[in-house]
Length: 183
Image 1 (spheres, rainbow, N blue to C red):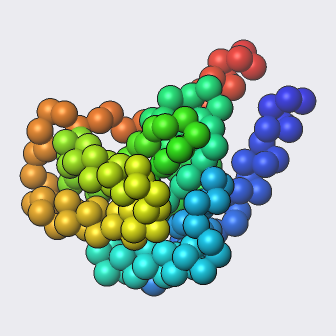
Image 2 (image 1 turned 90 degrees about the vertical axis):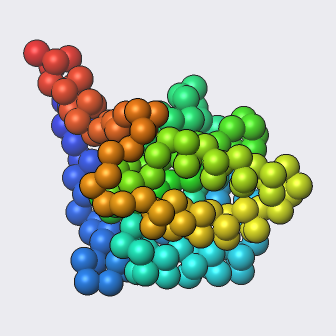
């Protein structure tokens, strides 16, 4: 019974259809600001910027601000958000929690293969300077530009340094855990 209750929300989320292959126009928002660091006009403008980068570069930049990671690490929370929202395969997520004083940049798909861990660390360090000064809009507008620069600086198929983070698939982990638990 518990497994069936969990299956209903998952299939509803999967059926929402988040990506139109021809234009990268996403129905789910790329700029999610739970901490309310931006006003509605800035969020709308950033949403347009992120959409333009998705169309221009072939990967999707995503921003999430949250109050809390709910007991998870920043990396785990970013992975969960990426999987739950059903973002496209090729994307980069910038997760920020000023309340917890942490950030994380998750790469997926081609971004995972083309943007090294040291590049994401450099991006984060650059953006933190803006966040410390309260220049949230400037930091969030600069993020897709930095991501595009790191993405285009790499050569497709080139080996990344050994410092690239391990890619996680939380959906598969949850499914396996539920099957084992049911057994």
